[in-house]
Structure formats: structure tokens, C-alpha cells
Amino acid sequence: MITKKHILEASRYNDWGGCKMSPLIAVGYGTAILAGVPLYRALVWIALVIGALVVGGVYASSLNDLSDLAEDKASGKTNRLSLISDGYRWCF
Image (tube, rainbow, N blue to C red; front, side, top):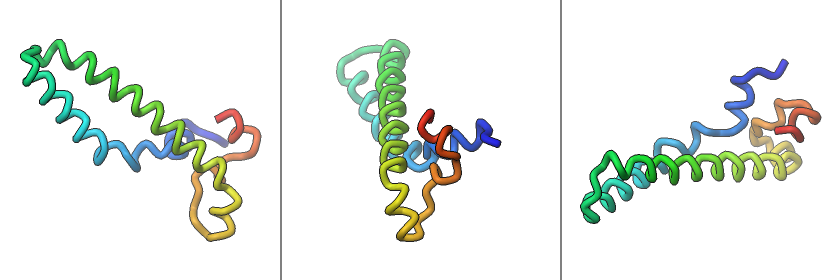
């Protein structure tokens, strides 16, 4: 049975979140400080950019896993989308 946990694991959100988001937040804060904009006003825009990058990152990771199913299986690499049935995989 496919659960919410399986779908979140298949999106690979843990693989890139912390190490790539911290520099983006720092650049956003630094830009706001240098521009003289209060941080509370800049947080909305920083959150919007990070949200867009998260959506793009999940899409790219999922597309990569989907297109590399055969290669990953042949090389013995684990692919999280291989745990999901074909019908659900294409919906994802």
C-alpha cells in the first residue's frame, strides 16, 4: 500500500534540503540587509523563492529517478521510485 511516507521518500526531499537551502537563505538575508529592507518584508520573497526551488528540485529528482529506473536496476543502485507500482509511479 502506498502511503504518504512512501511518496515523501520518493520525492527525495531529504537529499538536498539542508545543504542547499542555507546558502540561499543567507544570500536573501544579505541582500535585504544591503538594500536596507526590513527582514520581515524580505521573508515573504525569500520564502517564495525557496518554495519555487523546492518544487523544482522535487520535480527534477523525480524525473531523474523515473528516467533512470532501468539503469539503476542494472547497476544495483537503489531507486526510490522502483518501490512504487507502475500505475502510481506515472501518477507521481
